[in-house]
Image (cartoon, rainbow, N blue to C red; front, side, top):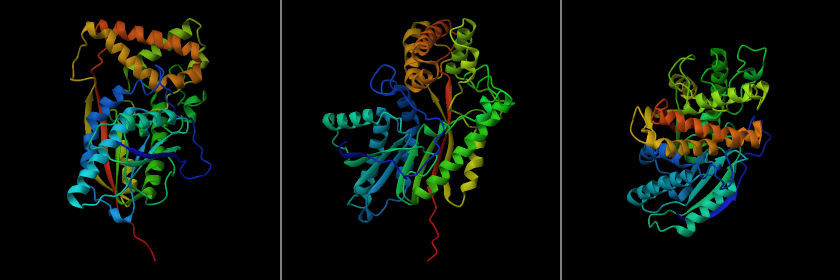
Length: 391
């Protein structure tokens, strides 16, 4: 695809309380998000056709009224974001060619937190221009929009198609009560949520509800009439006390516990770290959506299982232990290494990642950990209802 221009925009210029900034590994090092983006791309490839169906069904804006605007929330700095936008633009161009004739100019907004490595995004966009041999590529104007997605970022009624693939699984901030030793929600003794108390889960659930309410309220202002908003939620089973575990959290907490026992870090240092992500239940998502029945029509909502890297194998063959563990470690480096370094320091984080890889190889090799467990996603397609104006 050819890019006409890349510029920076910081959305609505106002003071915002952003809480804790969610950031990925920067640059092109081994711990960067760019280098670890392959697994995210696999998930996106499985889910994104649902978004493209929404593109096929949406009302096309009149090309004579201005550019067609597309926004990705939480674009980060990986290749998958560029590929996803390219797929959307090709589908739009095809529809304009077949149904209308003249097509509009396209304006694409890549949104993420201010700490995102937008330099890597610019580099990837420039490389796409230089190496592009795709005859179906679509010219577009690109702008980076640094700012928190849980507030206003765009003028009213300006977005025609917008989507968030992974970003809304991250919270705007860690609930204060989980760091308060006097609170029933205190999450001391672990760095994840899989063995947390019901009170801790309730605190995270309340924060996730507040964030999603704010996100949809902002998007309700920004989406144009009949504009389409597509969202992906990683989900867990219903119920506050339902199992909430990933290989990353189970193995990670065991390693941090060992570090505390050996005096590598203090218990208070471990206890002060809490995750910024939260997997909602389907019911939690639906309850928030019910507050926006006047603004959005729910075009589609469906659960979708993704198997990584393929199939649903119960046991990973031992000869795959090394490549699979390295693949999982690469994802962990890109997604969480910057957060870990900020809290635990570079030396301890490096030691943790080395131990993490070794434990992965051991457990995959002896069949006590399967890499091929399905991940459940809840996909929602919303259409902005027409506004009623008082003149």
